[in-house]
Image 1 (cartoon, helix red, strand yellow):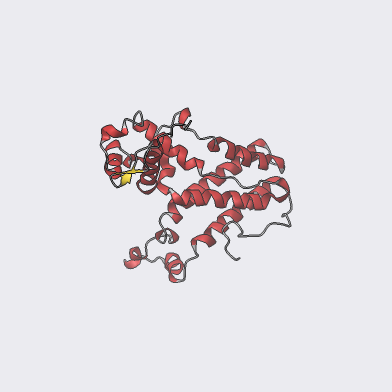
Image 2 (image 1 turned 90 degrees about the vertical axis):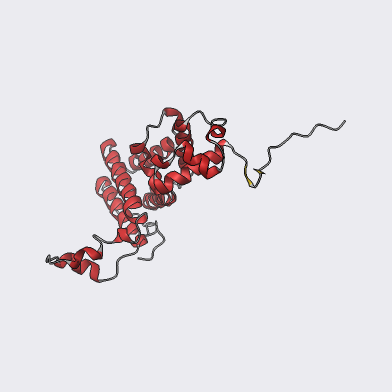
Amino acid sequence: MTEPRTRRRPASRKGRPTLTRELIAEHALRLAGAEGFPAVTMRRLAEDLRVTVRALYNYVEDRQEVVELAAQLMLSQWEVPELDPERWEDGVRAYCAQMRALYRKFPRALLVSLDEKISVRGVHPARLRNPDAFLGLLRAIGLSRTEALQVHAELALKLFGFALLIDYREPAGLSPVPAAWLTGDLDLPHLTEALAGPAPTTDELFAHITDTLVLSIKAASGRRPAPSASPGSASGTPR
């Protein structure tokens, strides 16, 4: 006896993708990454997906659920490298590099904690497991609870700021001020000097950021540099 075939939903209909919760989340995250979560409205999503607003409500409860689905999707892409206390410098650099890669994909979406209120159901496990693993590494190499918290805060501030002020605004983010501002009568020798030569690349700047973070950890732990460490390895930029 032949078993009945399971009917599958077509991948597209009338030339456009079939609407799903996953597709809604993908479009919401793409929009939030480029314009910020305030741009994510049901009407805007419906226009982008070429469906009616009513059709969206067949798959999600409300805009809040859309926001949380998008936030979960973003954090689901946050991977953590091996964090070995014996090679902690390499682990820290790789951790920073992976966070940067994620932030560069969705820079404006990083402001979700300022723009939105995410409920517990919207928190992806990676948002908890990854910081826990990083704090565990810091504690394993001898940092106190307070020192580990301070380093974690420093990392968050540096990477968050770098993603928004440097990577997102490149090349404008590489300059202290726009060159066009120096056309007045003010005597600004140091800004003039800073803008006169070639600017460092974003990868070189990021390598410097990770170097300073590693130095902070060394200062807190009192350890000597690990022999396996390679300055600048987080970005792959030659030093």
